[in-house]
Length: 65
Image (cartoon, rainbow, N blue to C red):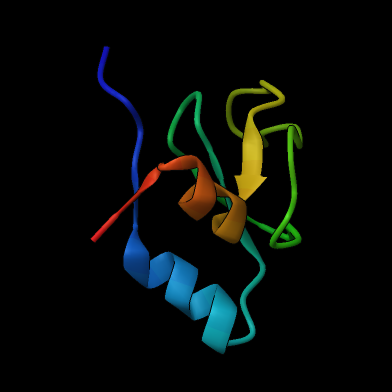
């Protein structure tokens, strides 16, 4: 099983725009309504508590260029 990654553009959109996005490291879904430092939010798609804010995902190594 490969590691889920998210595009850098989503992090930039959150940092410089008005989006509050998070990503689930379990299923890879992107979800709205997450603070930048969100940790272990429940995923609306898979139900796992593996949603993190985009900035948090960047620091954790889940963002690719």
